[in-house]
Image (cartoon, rainbow, N blue to C red):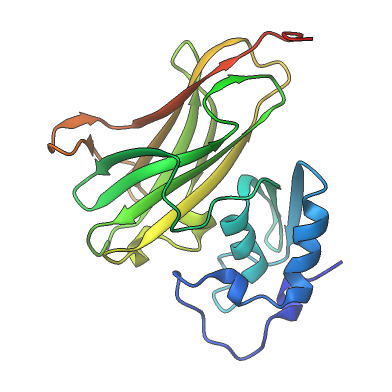
Length: 242
């Protein structure tokens, strides 16, 4: 078992949020995770530290949030946390997304587009939806925002959700500067008993202080909604296709 923090050089300053975390990790730390983790659909990182330890970088957690797709965080005690990930690799931070949108949230943030694995279309219960959303800061951002990613049922209710700060909290919006490109990677494990039908995947960004959502507008500055519908999926009936 590897303690991610044992393999980080001591006496280093906290790195900038735009640092590529793989540059901070010793190969002996990330290589086993990269190799053995990919033998499974999901993996779980057990941590003894969190954001409440201001002097700990948590480089392994940072790298996994950048490299893979986060499913869920659980806090069991002040010093016991787990983060589950899908083992599907995220596209590199600066790669142009497969599905381009180019919509604005507020005046200073651009949702450039997204990559989805599997792509929009037919899925089955127990499948894992991997979603990488690419954002761009058009100006320096001073406010702290949370990204909400939601699976919306055919009835319009939230079936699954992930509410987290960008890159698992390692690149919060108040540290975004003009021109920064950020990828936020999440995954949903579809329940075995998820009813069949057409579902939508939404993205929102809202204030971490009062919960108010940023308005969404197009290139003409016309406000559309308070959320972005990224794409839709059709959940097949159990047993469909054999």
